[in-house]
Amino acid sequence: MERELLQQTLLTTPVSDFRAFDEIGSTNDEALNWLEAGAEDLSLVIADSQTKGRGRFARKWVTLPGTSLAFSIILKPTKDIENENISLYAPLCGLAVQSALHRQLGLDAQIKWPNDVLLNREKCCGILVEASWTGERLNGIVAGIGINIRQGSLPPDALFPATWIEKHTGGDVNRYHLLAAVINELVEWRAKLGSPDFFSAWRKVLAFQGEPVRIEQDGQPPILGTETGIDSNGNLLLRDSTGATITIEVGDVHLRSIH
Ligand code: BT5
Image 1 (cartoon, protein in one colour):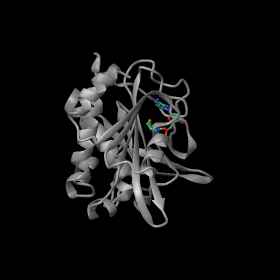
Image 2 (cartoon, protein in one colour):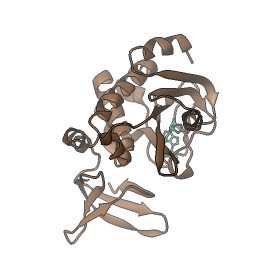
Image 3 (cartoon, helix red, strand yellow):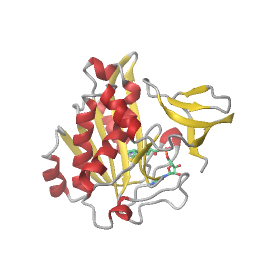
Image 4 (cartoon, protein in one colour):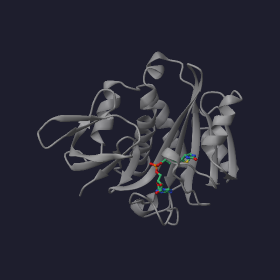
């Protein structure tokens, strides 16, 4: 990691403290440990490469040296608006990355419900949000974000078509500047979590709207329908062949476009 450049860039964000690694198992694991040890709100863990990067449901996330951004931000909800909308933290990260790509690089990314970020229908960013609880009390949230920046950042066996940012900008991207932009967007959208503005921004960039999609759930037959949007809880809405609305809650489901 170019530590000095990173440190300089983080001065343009409200990050309270950071830990940077050339190589780590998973930035989310480090952040969860740090959270338990009393990390402050907006502490950041970042690594140049991960040997045990995690996706959702125990899948792997690949972060190869010098090619990507892999970081985890510790968030400690205090306000009502935050505590009442815990399930919206993952889409919050998606929106932050989408907005940063737009503002910083002029790219029009879309969010594949609930939170993958796509460029031209291919995944450029994965998000893993984990909460740490003691009994009923929420200690905090770890928002893990992995963004493919350069060619060579992709695993050969990705489940979903994947891409990298520089393929779409045509030029070099300063990953620390993008990191700062994502953090600053995240802080801005966090203040509006669950608000009409939040949902309207999310709906505007929702991928596959009006298209036929398939929802796959482990051990259950797939659900087919036309994607019509998201409801005010962030659940995905489909219309089936009879015209009825189907509501899909975030869980162990996979959304696939049928195009
Ligand atoms: C995700 O899971 O997309 C969440 C990924 C979160 C990664 C960040 S990096 C920083 C932080 N620290 C961590 O340990 N994790 C977080 P999911 O939707 O389950 O997608 C996982 C699937 O994406 C895998 O099964 C692969 O097929 C594919 N994949 C793995 N690495 C990829 C990459 N770099 N680019 C695109 N696809 C990838």
